[in-house]
Image (cartoon, rainbow, N blue to C red; front, side, top):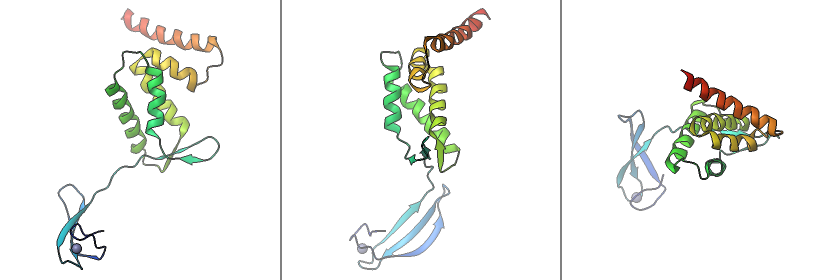
Length: 156
Ligand SMILES: [Zn+2]
C-alpha cells in the first residue's frame, strides 16, 4: 500500500476494524512521512472464467458478448440500455454461481434465453449462429414454436 502523501511503500497498520458495510477498515501510518490514512477492504464478486470446448479457459469477455448481441439486435427496437441491462443480468447470473469457471455453453444458453424474452427476431438471428441450426427446417420449427407460444397467449 503506497502512502497517499509521499508515495512511500513503507506503511504500517496501526488499527483494524469493521466498517458499517461489512468491509474492513485499516488505519495506517507512513513510516517515512508519519502521515496517517485509512484503507478499506471490501469483497467484490468476480465473473468466472469461461471454459471452452477444447479445454482451455479464458476471461469472461463482456465486449465480445456485447458485439454478438448487438449484431443480433441490429435494426430491432431494442435500445442500447436494454442490451446493457441484459448483459448486467447475464453477468450477475454467472457471478451468483460462485464458481471459478463456467462452461461457455452455459453463457450461450443464458444469452439465448434472455434474447428470447427481449426480441424474437434478435433471438432467431443469434440462435442461427449460436445453435448452428442445420437447415431451414430447424429454423422453421423454432419460429413455429415461437408463433405457437404467441397464439396461445392471444387465445387466452
Ligand atoms: Zn508518507
